[in-house]
Image (cartoon, rainbow, N blue to C red; front, side, top):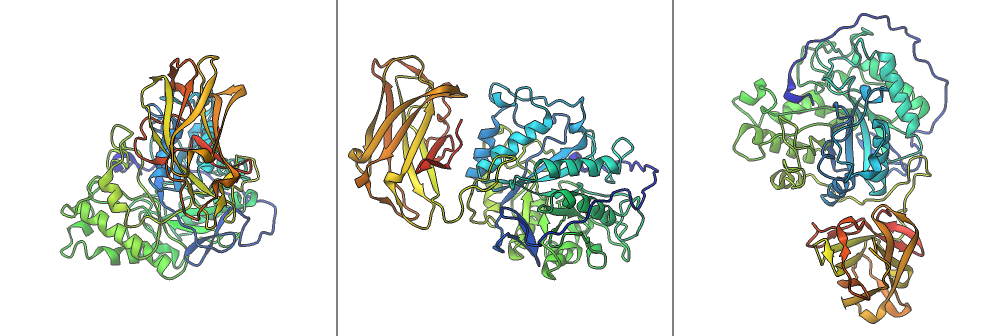
Length: 554
């Protein structure tokens, strides 16, 4: 989205595009792709085994702005935001960026480093690495969106005089190589909202977005054949018709001029669609509004999915009004209904509240969730499973579908920072389809011991019986951010099994010093004072036979 949706003047740069400017060695790749990645089959996105992908998506912007970092980090930690995204059920992030963030002189700013100490001194691309790493550990996938060439504003074409096509493609190849072994990143949205002189099917090398998409897509797939290639529409100038639509929304040219890549089953088409809060359009004032909208969408981009040409992912849609009385509210509900009825993929615009035209899923305090918007989106939210993937450069696969999976639910007992005991309630939930012997599981709560006094972990209540719980206080040889100690809870041999989809019930524990001196919980890794009713806390880790299966270690 372009803030304010202003129609910027088209900067047309005269240059020569040589047909052989980008050539890459030949290669052979199986259409189904590697484990952990996705490909297309008809109008579906599927995993390497052919199982349909389930995604609930949103946009989190900031890298494309002069901050060169995700917005909101001036208020919260990246971990907190990702935890909330996951808690609300979103497992896919469209992550906008600009090429300027990779320039030598571009530095991230407007970050509260007290809340984000692991980002200190990092370049913008290294902050992107961190976000991808943290998202992957939470089982959240990402596709990258080249939103703008520079941070100043949206460009009509995929190149400008300062950032020519060569730079656009080279940066995509760099990113495709950088994340080639990390299936957290599943695709490339090649350029945000082509418009103005951008054309489709005209054969003009300087303006034909379809041909440019093929050049960039093939360059990416030459170094990383596992990515999805996500192609937005244009505004007008479609060969063979006189249609006009939102920037990036006009995909009428696909039927006669589809994007064809050297690796099959990788193209996903991605329209953007907005309501009158962004700009007036003739269909909003039609006599049969909103009943006219489904045919409009069928004709402009929905046919691609209906005719099994390729998957459709609504990459941006959103608005402030979600009622059923205003024009924008009616439009937004109609589009949500259309997405649901046609089983389309989507990433909502946006997480950020500072999108001027639309607002966000977060309210202006950057913490509270917009419940009316979420209630509307609940109509198309899928039941998803968050399976962690590996670190960048690692093997990539987290627990497989047959491995034990669990979620740690947490409720803060003492919410103050200065306390003479650390108290919390836990429930360990089995997310697997089979029982798990409890004596194969252990739980770790990470904190700072604040002194050298001896400490004790004890239980106020346990639904399974306090006598079936084992405890240990383990100091760390090397202190970590937010932790120099962990308290471990295990289970005795006679504790039985954690039933499939079952829970341990309440486990209420306290940690105290033998001299009852105070702790400062404010810097404790596992302490989450905002969680006052049971919710997931990924700063508490769970292990099966010593292998991490839930949470993120400090």
